[in-house]
Image (cartoon, rainbow, N blue to C red):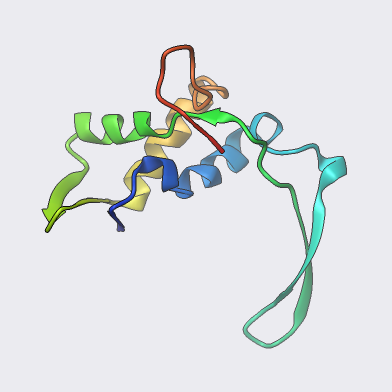
Length: 118
């Protein structure tokens, strides 16, 4: 499950996972700009990891909250004055993957849509 307290869907980085799987050439910097990182695993071994950063684009992640709501797969509650959202990560990932497979650019906002540069 994912629980989001006091933050919106623009902060849900799980959506980046689907972007990377389906449309890396749309959402990630070119392979020539990949960066090298040293990571330590559980056995204390140092691994070299090559990663591509995400492009700075006007993304509309809020649409996926709407899709979850239409399917009855999101719970919205208040904790004091804080809005809390909860949903299964699997449900969100399935929706995003399905939408991206239909249109690889579906996350990029269109004129008049809510968006965040990220």
